[in-house]
Amino acid sequence: MMSVQAERMILQGKRNGPYRLQRQLGNGGSAQVYLATHIQSGRHVAIKIVRRPGSDAAIKQLYNEARILPRLHHPHIVRMLDFDSTETFSFLVMEYALCGTLRQQYTIGTQLPFSTVAHYVQQVAAALQYTHSFGYIHRDVKPDNLLLTLDGLVQLSDFGIATTAYYADRIHDKFGTAPYTAPEQADGNPCAASDQYSLAIVAYEWLSGHPPFAGTTPEIIWQHHMAKPPSLASRGRIVPRAVEQVIQQALAKNQLQRFENVMQFSHWFTWAVQQPICPEQARVVENIAMSRPTLRRTTRNVSSPTQNLPQTERTIFSHSALQGDRPMIRQKSRLSS
Image (tube, rainbow, N blue to C red):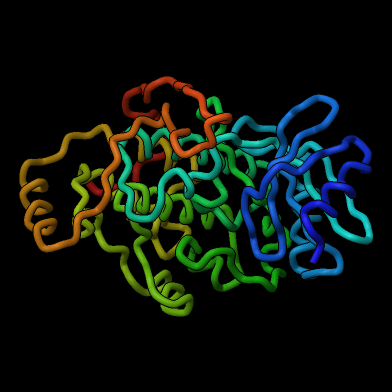
C-alpha cells in the first residue's frame, strides 16, 4: 500500500498543483480523503484518492463524480476544483469544508432543535432540487455526505453513485446506504422521490436521535418495504402533530404518495416545526420517556459547530435565524386535517 509520504511526492508533481497532504479526513473503503494545501496559494482543499490498480467500483464512482460535479454550480453542493488520473492513482480535488460532516458534528443519539433541523433540511432540499433539475438522482443522502462550511452552509457531497433518471432502470448496484434507502431504490428503480425519502429519514434521525429502522441490511430493507416508521413520539421526542404527518408522507412506501418534489417537503416541514405542541402530546411522550433510556438532546446552536476542530482551525461563525411563516404551496396539500 502506498505511504502518505509517497502520495505527497506524487501529488506535488501534478499539474494545477502541487498539493501537500496534511492529514486524513475520512476513509470510504477504497477511497481516502485528505486535507491538503495548495503550495503556491496556501489554500486548503480536500483530496479524494483512489489507488490504482484497486477497486473497479471505487474508480468508476470517482470518475462518475468527476463527470457530474463540474455541471452543478450551487452554494449547497460541494465544488470540484481539479481531477486527474495516473497509473498509480486517481484523485479528485474539492473545496474543503472546515467543520467536517454533519455526522461528525452530531453523532447517533443526538436530538437537534427544531430550528436547526429545519435550517439543514431547507439547504439540502435546495441542493437536491437543483440536482434533480439536471436529471440527476443522488442516491446516497445521509449525514456522512453533508458537509458544513465555515460560513455555516450545508453542502451536499459524494456524487459517486449518482445516476440520471434515464439510466435509473439499468443500474446494477441497487442502493447506497441501507438505513436511508427508499424502497424503490432498493429494488433498483431510483427516482427523484427516492432522495426526498432519504432526506426525510435524515430529518427523522436529527429529531429522534436514530433512523426509524435498524437491524441487518436485509432486515432494514424489508422494513423500508413493509413497516410503518415508528412515530417520533414513540421515540421520546415531542413534536407538533404536523411534523409527524409531514415526515410520514415523505416516507410513504409508494413514491407517488410523497410530496410532489423535495422542495415542497422542505416547505411543509419548515411550516410544521413552527406549529404548537398540544398539551396531551407532552403528557403521552412524558410517559413513554420514563420507560426509555435518555437520549442526548443538544441545544447547541448551529452557529458554533467547530468545538471539536483543532485549535488552529477553530473559529466562530453565525447564520441568520430561521425566518418566515407558513410556506406558500400551490398544490393542494395531501396532509390530513
